[in-house]
Image (cartoon, rainbow, N blue to C red; front, side):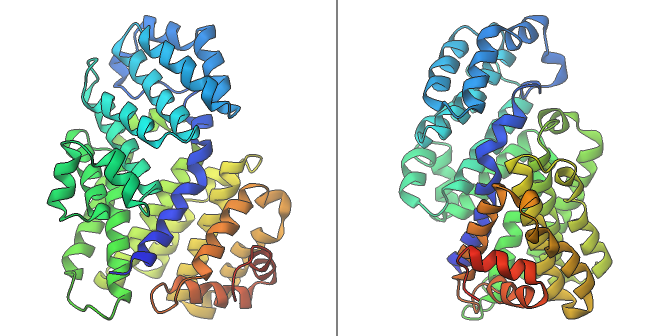
Length: 380
């Protein structure tokens, strides 16, 4: 397996998580089933104290937000209110650089110490898996804060010490407890990264049963698609998180794209449609950093897929997608995050990460994209 190839795709997660709390928490209900929205919970979340703590978080005053949400958690009147405060506390702790504290805040919810519901526990597991994605290149942090206690140490043991595989196990545990499209698409995406690495690592042929892995990927995507229409909790949690929705659909598209390299059951038009689905979530409002970032990255992944699958026969659509990078009012500050990601990929060995070569091919087709990546310091 090629670690750099796997790591390159984890970077996309870094691009929206910093501002996720801005969309996620101010107006959406806590991660519970709708039946748990009691009047005391609603009143608690609309209180001046809660609003002030949230304002501290969205303004980036993480240390103050940590103190405020710790106090709010101590006085929470219901399990749903407690879960909401602990999730906010986890984001505040992460923003303040306390990865261990953030992980423990999720683990408290997962241990169900305050009567959390299965949906709440599952969503906390998904959030914990999200943290492991963000630090997956740092085994010391993973060992110290994530996989330091059971059952997480058991997941790592089951994965023979492979942190990436242990992370998949966290999402599988969430999925087993309370399935959502989030867990289904995450599992499919991470399995697709394993498949992607295996497809491009000729040094160890036969290390992965590609047919079985690709089949499982598409089964998870199909299950996630069904849950999108029938399961209300994720839609409730992410009702104000367009960048997160876009990211989940990029994960979905990537999973379908690369599993199809093995199964060949989908047309190019079907794969293209999967990438297209990620764009409307963020294109409607490009006035914020998170949407700018995902709008840029969704286009980059889509264009890279087109050049790899269809070559220059897809030139018109590729050029249209990449023209986005020539408009600073669209890319904005979010473009800086995207630029750093593309720069990172450009430094990879193209024999390990084909995206590196695809950056060069895309830059040859689009002057706007070429200027963007050169300004980012990417190597062409």
